[in-house]
Amino acid sequence: MPRDASDHQSLEAEIEALRRQVAELEAGREECRLAEEALRQSEERYRRLLESVTDYVYTVTVRDGRAVSTVHGPNCLAVTGYAAEDYRDNPLLWLSMVPEQDRPAVLEQAERLLTAGEAPPLEHRIVHKDGSIRYVRNTPVVRRDASGAVVAYDGIINDITERKLAEAEITRLSLHDGLTGLPNRLLFMDRLRQAVARAERNHDKVAVFFIDLDYFKTINDDYGHAVGDAVLAAVAERLSACLRHSDTVARFGGDEFVALTPDIGATRNAEGIAAKFVAAMAAPFAVLGHTCQLGVSVGVALYPDHTTQVDTLPSLADAAMYRVKKAGRNGWRLAEPPLPPPGTTLP
Image (tube, rainbow, N blue to C red; front, side, top):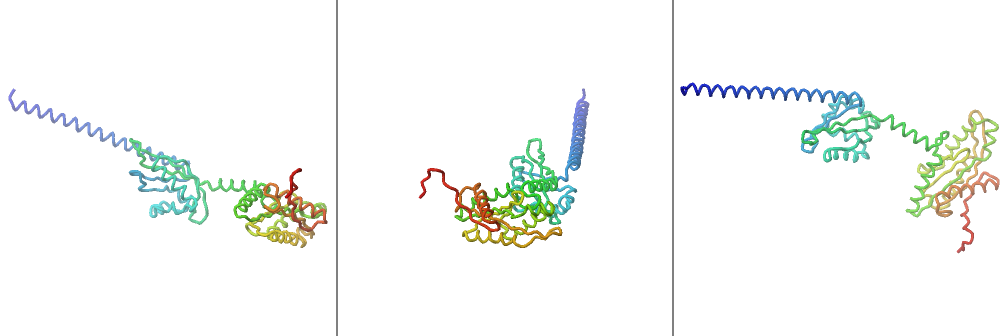
């Protein structure tokens, strides 16, 4: 075969091979384009799904283990009061909205996402643009590349303010008296234990007052329970007015009240408060068109003078109060230390 014919056939073969390569590249590029389009559509469906089941989503883009940008979804306005553009213009806005006490936990969650690639949901507070406190649940969903490296994560933000407020109200009701709003026995004993522990460290005294109204049954009998309840609410206000904000007045039930004064110092300070309680009840109560006259009997027990046992303090004050009742009512008396067990040698 002539040389030029051979060269011509060889050139045609090379051209055909190049055409096949070009076709394969075109097919590969189309596959990539289709894959990219499918991925884009998948991410769009994913985002729409998230935004349909939550309050809003923000996305943090990660590069080389560092957060490089954050985009907040449009629903952020309803939850936080700030628009997505506000977060774009101020990258630190989200963190500045978090109260100082909650920031360490928020920063720790972000750090764990960047270093470990996972973090549990976190509930924390934010300050809404209108100044109100909101509670949110931040649930991270990590996205990785083919090698497993974190390339982004979505923060799913749920506004849980109503749930948190409902939980707080349930807790408040479980620890407070429904009629007067005062702490109940459970909360009082918890505060008493804290006060005694602090007094033990500071070498100070704690006073417990057991307060029982005199002749209260007569009010219920003469005017009915509605008037009696109104009197109890007024009594709670008068007793509270006798104390500092750091002190506690509680209602144990019926017409029995107790009070707690931490860091009372000298015994005479507790005696002065007991006398204030008696004086506060001396003025008549005008409620629901009736004028009601009461007295009060008060027993006082001191830590550590009368006992070092926390649970014993109210019962010692109660016993002192009953001695006031027997002596004619409308007064106060200090407790007496409990008797030692039989056979104990006194100093």
